[in-house]
Length: 131
Image 1 (cartoon, rainbow, N blue to C red):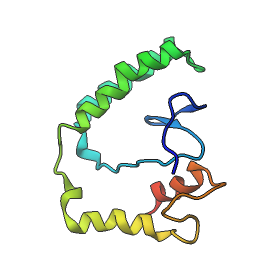
Image 2: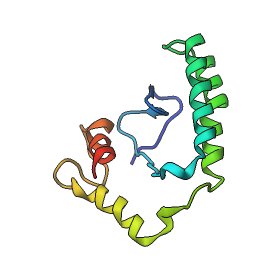
Image 3: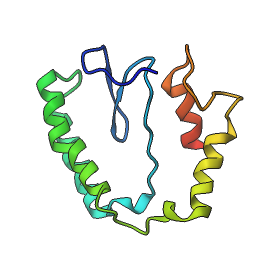
C-alpha cells in the first residue's frame, strides 16, 4: 500500500476546502457534521480565504501554498480538534449513517480497499452526495 510522498507529484485542488491529491496512494478520509465548526468562525474563514485568493490567483507557487496552509488549513484543523458542536458521530445510530453511505456503492462503484485505475473523484463524489 502506498502512502503520501512529499517528493512525488501531487495536485492541490480547491473546492470548499483544499484537497491534496496524489495518484495511487491510500487516503484517510474524515467525516464531520455541520456544527463541528461554529458558523461565525467558518463564515469569517471563508471571507478571509476568498479575499486571499483575490490577491493570490491560481496556480499557486510553492511559497503561496505554504502560506495558504499556514493561514487556512491549519486553522480549520485546529477548530475541528476543539470538539465544537454536539459530536453526533459519537452516537451509534449516526455512525451507522456514515457506514451505510460508505457501503451503499461498495462493490458496485468501488471497493473499500485499494484499487488500481480508479480516481479519487470516482469514489468520493457519490459518497458525498448520497442521502
